[in-house]
Length: 362
Image (tube, rainbow, N blue to C red; front, side, top):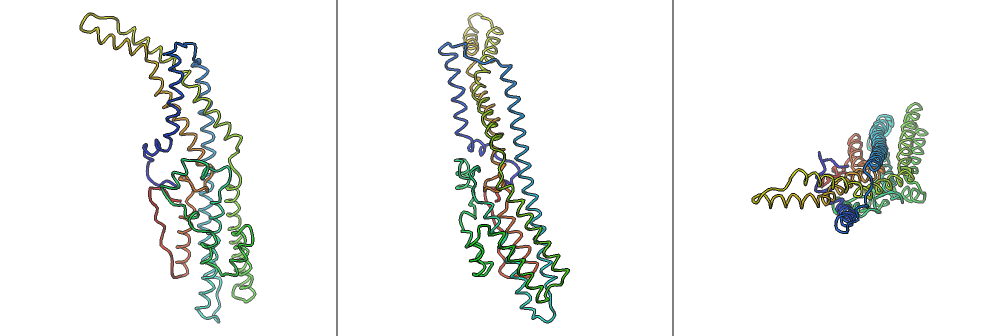
């Protein structure tokens, strides 16, 4: 998640610098053929090209809206995880009670349950950071530059087993990692532990039901996160959108050359020949008018960059858990939840909030 007010234009240009050079070359070739080699038939009528551009703009806008919907839904899901985690913690703290039990043992039970919940958060975020083949995290050189220079992805630096080991017993750790979905197994262990506490009369019947409902809500939120992670934006739509954008970028220089040549002819007609002193200036205007078509190169490159920038912003926002700069910051949220719920039970050894640089929070 990018947290500064604006993204510097210099950063956007660095992110797309390779494509900008490509846009300039795509515009240079037809202008060279048109003006230097005299292939004046080499152009596309502007009217149908403008229709294509309008259609592409609508398609890109639709995709970006769909990408933002996925991003915002993911953020709402994790907002629900924040609230459900707090609710689960205060239920454990207030419902697991026994006047006959020593305070230290009771606090140890609370600590065990809350730490296991932190282990669930950790397992879930690691699962959500797992790379899928349709994601951009490792496929894109631009994201590789981001990943290596701007910020470290903690899930890539510390193995999942090591991150979870500090919160649960070695027996539980072994059992959890024998299964494919570690997060689901941890919630299953929580449920079994609550049942055991109920059998020991440390939890009342009503309280047992309430805590199980909280666990069911956590299961539902996990499932919603997995749905977004495991079901991509339809690749056929994304592929067609990508093809249409590049088709427009390729045709654009051929459509604007004739328009710029008309502007050049207008410049010449507006500056007729003059006597002596202004002859040099007139020659300059004539030269500019005859070769004004070359100004279509920066124009085409700029328009192409606008369309391409909109395309990649949507492309890099449609997978909100992949570890990119537009992600939902699940690592930071997990640390914030851990601090919050461990403070609720007056735990010790609580970690500090994560510190992020370069304006990106993951």
